[in-house]
View (cartoon, rainbow, N blue to C red):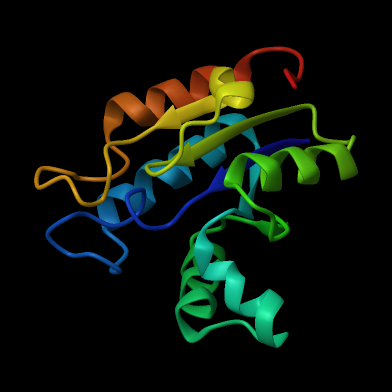
Length: 150
């Protein structure tokens, strides 16, 4: 199974319209999923409310609904840990069925996972546009590699 660890802010939105799913970025994500037969695991901090309250936040529900409406399958969330890198490593350690993965994120440097990271410009960067064509192509390349590196 191939998985995309998905951050929301800085990936699916833009600096101009923060917290709003950009249609072009969503189409690029859909293209990655279609070309690589991948599913999505939410690694965004939007999931944190679930671990605090046991309920999904309205923003997370909206994100999941939009993804699934576009035939992007969401299969889970990373656990809450000290760092996003630890969250993803923990998820990978619990899910040995994952044969390859890609991380789409704008906030974190993940040294131990850097070969699978598509690092986007920070959401706070004035010219930030989220998931662009170059990042989409890199994600596809990572997901089409053979073998899981962790």
